[in-house]
Length: 576
Ligand code: CTP
Ligand code: MG
Image 1 (cartoon, rainbow, N blue to C red):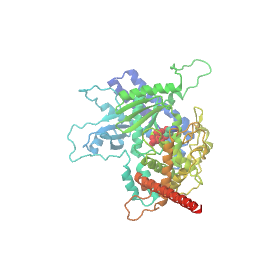
Image 2 (image 1 turned 120 degrees about the horizontal axis):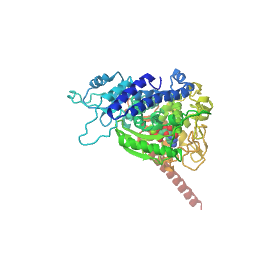
Image 3 (image 1 turned 30 degrees about the horizontal axis):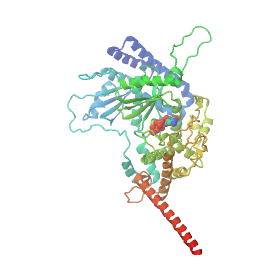
Image 4 (image 1 turned 180 degrees about the horizontal axis):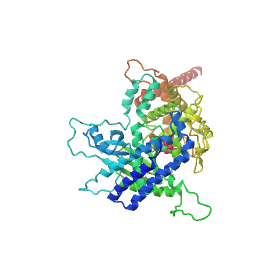
């Protein structure tokens, strides 16, 4: 699928939007700029696609049923551009809403969800329908408050007619958060094997099709704000929203991508006249990123409908703007110029696509870690989900035979078009799935989970560093409790924040969970409603029980030693 609609369609829709702008506040210049911008964006993206798409073999990826992240993102972005987000009145039937909205054109996808009220995502078949719906929308009357005159694709549907009778909530709402842990434990307890429990957990936790669409739509809505300053920019999700390891309710990491402006340059002719832009200079690239994020952050704060609690965290290693997007319920982190993170997102996605056991194991370990407070949504000395994911990948590389290849091997398989060096860091790795030959490892998910806990229960954390580039532990280059080498910025430690207490807790939990799994039945005990297998591992009280059992064991051992010493003493006394 092409990343953008055809040029003629793009022109038509831009013109439709221009009409809208001219009626509202825009001048002819604004209008022309928008047409121009839209064309530039369409052409720009297509040029960029042409440069990278052919060698990336998207078609080849799709042939064996796997799409590259690049292809998935292009499709989702294009869907998002044809979509609007609408707050809907409760007690209005879906049928009625659909009938009303379809006056603007064919609807390709519709779903609703709850977040501070009922919201609907409406994807039209054509972009013109979005222009038409915006043209028909009214400005809210401001009786007490003043309105910021910023129009966006976030709308409210009003129903001044009678509410639909006998309809409490007439919409089939799609859940956007995970089921509570006790419900999950109940569900897992009903499964027949530990392997099935792992699969069931993955299905319950992973992002749904709808949630993924909503994430791209939020990026697209924010892009509409950012393009007021940088018409060619794009805002794209990265991290767990797109790397295949995202859990419902995870944060939305976004990158403001200005590469289409600064990265794609026209070659200056060697002789004759030519033009170049006059541009303001700054001290460093970091300073440019900070000032861009600062301005966009202010815009999001002051003009962005539904964006609340905006915080500019510009002095962080990776400057960002953090805010909550209320209509979607997402906690958002907007960064810029964070290209290495895009590469690590692509790498994680690739690993997740190579073998279904990768994702299942990552989900299970992430869920287990969250249930026991090993990870947290609050920043601190905890192990992060990203670190935990790298730890699972490393473990899978250490199996015999390995389940996934090392990053060095993926780099060796790369073609010329995969070459990527970002700020001096080699980020090259193969993108063509068909070039990657996997070894035949037949271990079950149950074995792998048990072995994972065993592996980290006995790992030499004091001396060794986890390294997915080499697929082998390396001597630690620095004294930190946990050292996980950043796959691309190899001098950095991904888990620098983790303190000794948190690492000790992780190791102790691995020991206890490994012990617990070994004691557990491997298939569902017939007719028993109590948690078993993986479900037991997610019960904090159960682990606490194990702790006290262990404590009791330790106490018993020290009692035995005490007794032994006593008897030796007595013997010695008898001898003398
Ligand atoms: N990242 C990185 N180096 C780090 C931390 C993060 O390269 N030290 C990149 C990774 O690509 C990561 C992304 O930034 O996936 C987003 O970071 P974060 O939100 O912390 O992790 P997620 O993978 O998104 O996991 P979560 O579901 O907890 O948000
Ligand atoms: Mg994240």
